[in-house]
Length: 480
View (cartoon, helix red, strand yellow):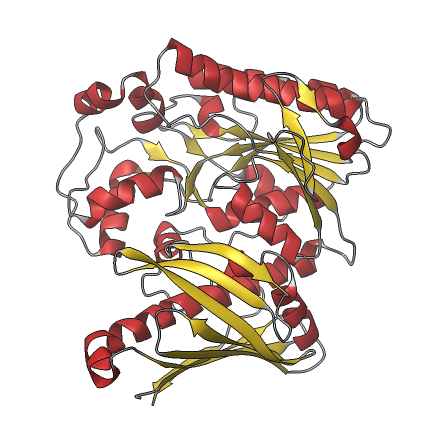
């Protein structure tokens, strides 16, 4: 059997014990899974100590494969290992080591010994591809680990929070929950289940006005992300009513309930969108800019106004006006990837409309920042500091994917395909600044579009974000 070895070591801004603790908490696997990978957790038992077990479904070669990993060789504050007992490799052993470098730093080392199926033939066919995939994956994992540890050190202040989240299974919520839980915070999910009886869940149903108020007592904060996907289907009167009602009714129910609690939370982070500003051409926009005209600006205005009961009860309310959230797991970027990978991408309309984008990593970082920053209240634009025009976005995505971008979509074709949604989502221009985030001290991990796309898509980015506290040092070795 032909064995291969992959080793990566990076300097982390926390002690060996703290970094191992981070890996042991719920959500660590989710935080470490690159967004371009198709992986589902089927079962987990026993944590990372000896005998713990993780069962995954991994999509490879066009089909789903079962991967079972068993943990072993656990040493408190120093290491844990996992061994594949069922899966796509002929052999796989992964040791996670935490090597002290003084009291407040350590080296994280991932040491993997593996063998491909079919011996030398398997190595000949897939050896270079697997090495490249491991390099991309662990570049991503080490960047995320370092940046998450820095966030926790900056905002936690030695105190854990109890935070309730609506929309916890959506694009943002599914990234926020593991970010908070790996920091030692207690996350409560508001779910539309029959009774919400599972641990860590509170039942609610905005459509019927049902909510378990007792389950919301004693919270430190609430993050409200729930709402109908605005791009799920073509707009008509019925769909527009669903979009509006899902936001206004749900926010009203939640805020009226929070206002009546015996122990209300200190802060409510409520989602909104830069759709508040409408189509504004080249006009620079910030939090004090006025409301625009059209369907989405009207929805955003009513959405934000629905938080008034919470604000009147003395709860600090923050309206996060999200820009175009970038992730290959959902949203605009996920929809673009297939045509762009096929070489069929191109600008939309004139290409001159401004796109105020933000990487998903900075979305959840901004929410964490808003939870912990007492000075933040009212509207907060959640966008990167460098918006780009659609034609620049198109060229950059094509460059990252190594694909031409020669197939524009004229405005009339966008309107034929998407109707009213085209004018408000695809052709509208909003040049938005994150002034409140910058003024309150938030440091963006990804302020440059190309570096954000390379990070999210695993495209040959080996350097950490420039403003990540403590440069990540890493070295990779692949040998027999």
